[in-house]
Length: 199
Image (tube, rainbow, N blue to C red; front, side, top):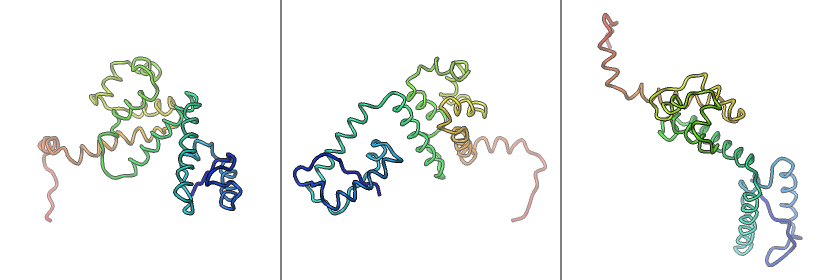
């Protein structure tokens, strides 16, 4: 549980001299040793012993703090935050067992480029790809290779590991192997003298 109360002077229904406040202030100071205010704000929960009025006032304080934090965030901080979010969403997806088109390699690569705010031409140059090849990757007409996964890992400052990028592609291949009956029948037709076993 993460609890944060503003250190503003006492006002209204919130008295910052109460045991509850002092306890929470101590927790907040400990958390500040490890996390920024923004990280704490993103994870806070309210204690159960607050009145409705206290809860509303604290919610308002958090809203103001969150808006202030977002306004003061540098471009580098924004980019890091977005990439960390992307990484965690990928990780969560890869821990599930089913394929989702939103997490296909082309869609995630498209999202990555969007987060960067780069043109596709500039991005292709930064990772050493011809723009036409990048276009084919984004359209799904060409599959990524391991070398590209390494380049993406390096480009994002090692935030998103190469194995994540590769597993996005592998998940799509797994789905195709499970569902592409037409290609299966076609390839079966090329096999002769296959082994036969009784059930």
